[in-house]
Length: 107
Image 1 (spheres, rainbow, N blue to C red):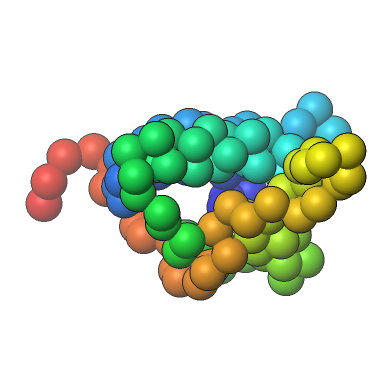
Image 2 (cartoon, rainbow, N blue to C red):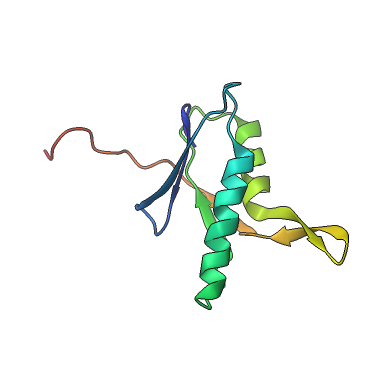
């Protein structure tokens, strides 16, 4: 989670999707949910039931953005037997510090 949007890496360190801010300047949590729903679907097809995810916000990310991100990665609304239910995505979320990305070359 950065001031310019979000980044989904899978596996760790491998960019899967860049999610820019919405035109309103807000994080696009709806797109984040859709991306993670697709990741979850692909994992299930491979027989892999991952439940954990790590959020790596920049130090200046506000608390409410982190809470909303945690809520978004935990579950999504799904229709089951004509009822709306919360379907699990990655209910085991944790937070860490965003890794420093190298700019330029080594050294």
